[in-house]
Amino acid sequence: MFEQTPVKTAAVAATIAALAAYAIFGGYFSREIVIEIAILAILAISLDFVAGFGGMISLCHGAIFGLGAYTFAVMTAMWDQPGALAALAAILVATAFGLAVGAVTSKTTGIFFIMATLAFGQMVYVATFESQWLGGDDGMSGVARFDLSPIGIELGDSLQFALFCLAVLGTAYALLAMVLRAGFGQTLIGVHTNEDRMRALGLSTWRHKAAAFAISSAVAGAGGVLAAQHTQFVSPELMVWTLSGEVLVIVILGGIGTLVGPVIGAAVLILLKHEISTYTDHWHMFIGVVLIATVLAGGRGIFGQIEHLIAGGGRGAGRDA
Image (cartoon, rainbow, N blue to C red; front, side, top):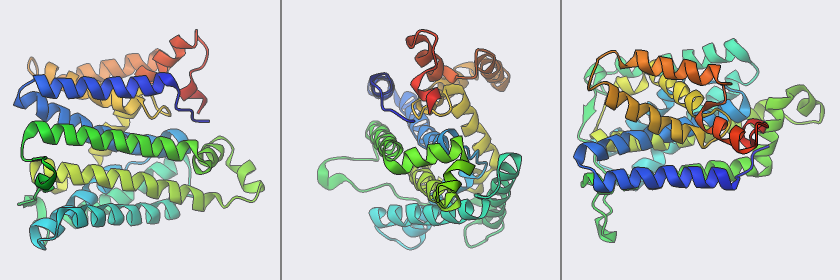
């Protein structure tokens, strides 16, 4: 079962606080890194929600992320709708798509589930890439950021936008943690642990898994909204399946099934990438070495290993989930 332990609370709070300090005291480039980390962390925790606690390893979360970004772009850049309405529409579209994917794929498991989600993601990518209405492979520009000037927040400022993204990350984490602590989340974990037993108890497991996928997709769609505002431009590159693969690496690196781990994993991966890339273009190789070392160390990920050590060598709370 999932528990929001003091260790989890301290870890997520410390990570977000450290990133906020990095944005405040760093320059423009530091703030861009923080924004990138926050957006990828939102996508990563959405994936961990279904992969770590529901056993559904998805390779279409990148497409769902891009779907949210494109919906927001169409609503603001093409239809001149208010940012709040556009964001709501983007989250609803991502949720509806996630519900459909979850309903279709919920009766599959393992490699079949992974390949089915990959197929859905590729369909969205190809449809977007070939749509001239959406700009095709040239993408779409002119995406506006939220207008929060009435409350004294100017998101055109890189620092304020970075802090705003961190606030959204904290909110997304809190909402998913609340769902996991509730009956729905405990049932989801039960389905992951022993689906046959849950089905024997009378639970419609496919509906529960589809609903979980929809919740996860809503959070991924919210991340897409921030991504569209960050660059004020969207393109099919947001939907390439390799983005889903990169996010899965983040989840594994940070600690799958911990919810906190993906936040830490996103920070570590992005910071390492930018630091190593200043010396060599082959930064992927070094990240691969780190990931291999993480798996060989027990497969718990960074935060999972921290919990393991705090527990005195016993299984951490996140792994019990």
